[in-house]
Structure formats: structure tokens, C-alpha cells
Image (cartoon, rainbow, N blue to C red; front, side):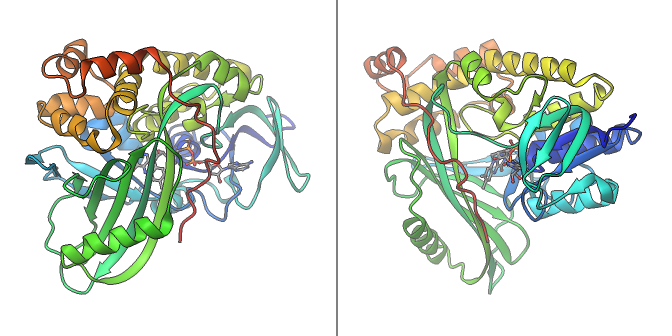
Length: 399
Ligand SMILES: Cc1cc2nc3c(=O)[nH]c(=O)nc-3n(C[C@H](O)[C@H](O)[C@H](O)COP(=O)(O)OP(=O)(O)OC[C@H]3O[C@@H](n4cnc5c(N)ncnc54)[C@H](O)[C@@H]3O)c2cc1C
């Protein structure tokens, strides 16, 4: 290490930075690291969920030390035309669970909290308070940024963690309950039964504008809970305004966010599912790749990560195309039809879709047949571009 503070400095202790640190601690405990987080705890305050089919064995092993809620019996979806039970197991962890695992698995000196980085360079970072952390390799995991170089729409949501007075009786997660009134976009409610009395209820919208009306969403969660007889104490909430990427120029985007010689990961590094806005499966993969390349000089690690991001972008074009059709061709209140049709597909296809691993046959099956949107509107959507994903992206403040 010779005169440096550490071998690897990770800026941002959220999902991607936290998992990279966890992978290094598990696989390369000889590599010294600093996980530098501006907030009071790693991970912020969200809940991250994923399907069992999203991760391979190595990914499961990475997440083994993290406490999580597991629904082995699968999940279900509900649309105006039908309900369907799916057998894919579902998993969820709270940021506090990731934070606890990091505190357990990493040496105490590796986690730096309340440490906002003001300047990032290839050989180290400077904090707002003037302290410097020098490193052989620096990883930028500071989360999504507003950008004029990518286009799309938005996934806007508010989730509430509730302890019900009576047992709620729900055995499996409801991934999408789209039987609710469709307002301003594709709307669905997502429900996780965290224990016999605890529920997580989230009201979600695929909408054109990055606008989150807190009191309206809170009122609609109240109404949904009332309708289901769920009443009790509110334990917390989360909100999100996530970009749904339908197109843009990845090279220009990367030029605009890259610091020469610094590896970009997470949402900032383009490692997202363009349509679901989820990043967990890709954050797990990049974390494992970082641990494998932990001896590389910083500039080489950065180049490898960027090559990975470009491959990821190239391989996720299908989801951007679907997003384009969803936002551009379907009237906001009729977008539900796109998902209602999609969820009639075979389960393995749905699993590969969420994991970002759709095959050519899957893509053909999704696109061919009775179109979910009018053909003329779909063609018009494909020849025009969506607005830039520019806004204030740090909407996820939570209780
Ligand atoms: C409420 C919410 C729920 C979500 N649920 C899911 C889900 O269920 N499944 C899923 O796959 N995805 C989910 N997502 C989407 C996505 O996976 C998350 O946004 C994920 O946290 C992105 O990971 P990241 O590491 O890129 O960024 P983040 O997790 O946001 O981490 C970035 C970190 O960098 C820190 N930081 C920023 N600037 C600095 C600085 N200058 N110095 C030091 N630290 C800094 C921030 O404080 C933050 O902790 C959710 C997003 C939100 C907002």
C-alpha cells in the first residue's frame, strides 16, 4: 500500500458502494478500503427488493450476511382482467440491514460516515472538511444524476411501513396490484407482508413528469389500506423519483460524469434496468467484478468498469424500446394494458425480463402478437424522443 491511506476508496455507501465494499471484505480481506458516505449510515433509508431469479450462486453468497425477508412461495400480481400467482421467490432488505452487515463484516476504520467528498481524483478524494484519503483505486458510487444526455420518463412512488393492529393475513408479496384507479400514468400498489402484522405498502406511478405529490400519495395509501382493513401504526416511509431510461447518448452521458481514472458504478455508472429502474442485480454483479479485479491500478479498473457499462447499455436496448413505447404510445391511463399483457407471458420469460437477461425469443414474444399499444402510436413513439432526464434526483428522503 506504501504511504497511501488505503488500496481502494469507494465514494458513496449506498447500494452499489456498500455491496462493492461487502464483496471486497468477503473475498479480499487483504485489500484495505474506505467506504466514504455523506449520510449518517450506509445505505440511506430505502427498501431494496429482488427476485430469486435475479441472482446466481455468487450473488446469493454475497448477500448471505445481510438480514432479509424471504418469500419462498413466490408472489402475485393483480390486474383489472385477472390475478396471477407466480412461483418465483422474492427477497427484500432494508438499508438498515445492509448497514448492519457492513458494520459487522468491515473493519471499523473502513467505514467513514458523515464524510461528504468534495473532490474526486484517480489517486484519492478530498472531503468537504479538507481531509484527504489517498488510494490506489477510486470508485465513484454516488448514485444517479440528473442529465441532459439521457431521455425517458419517471417511476414515482411512496412506500409506507405499517404495523397492523390485526394480523393482515397476506402470505405473499403483491408485486403489482393494478386494479387501482389509473391516475396520470401506469399506477399500481406494491405490498410486502414483512411479518404477520407488518406490511410495506407502496403506491407507484409510471408518469411523464418527475413530480411527487406527497400528500396525494399518502392519502391514496390510506385509502388502499382502509379498503383492505389494514389499520395501525406507521413505522416509516420512503419516496422515490427514479428515471426510466428510454434512450439517449450513453457515450456523451459517460463523458459528462466520468472523472479520468475513477471507476463508475451503480446508477451513476448506468448499471440500471432501464424499464424497472432497479439496480440490485447489476450492483451485485459489479461488486463481484470489483472484488475479482481488486489488484488492478485505478485507471485499469475504471476502464474495465466503463467497458462493462457500455456492454450493459448495448444489451438493455430492448427495455429502452419498451419504455419508449410505454411512454410514447400509450395514453397515461391506458399504460396498464401493457403490463397486463406482459404478465400473461410464461414465468421464465418474466424472470429473465426482470434480471435484464431476455433472450431473442423472449423479445420476439413480447413484441409480436396483439400489440399492447396502437401500431401507429408505437411507430410515432419510436421516431420521436422523450424528454431529457433532468431534474433534482435526490427525492428519497425517508423517516
Ligand atoms: C426509495 C427507493 C427504493 C428503491 N427500491 C429498489 C428495489 O426494491 N430494488 C432495486 O433493485 N432498486 C430499487 N431502487 C432503485 C435503485 O436500486 C436504488 O436507487 C439504489 O440505491 C441505487 O444504488 P446506487 O449505489 O447507485 O446509489 P445510492 O444507493 O443512492 O447510493 C449513493 C450514496 O452516495 C452517497 N453520496 C452521494 N454524494 C456523496 C458525496 N459527495 N460524498 C459521499 N457520499 C455521497 C449518498 O448519500 C448515497 O448513500 C430504489 C430506489 C429508491 C430511491
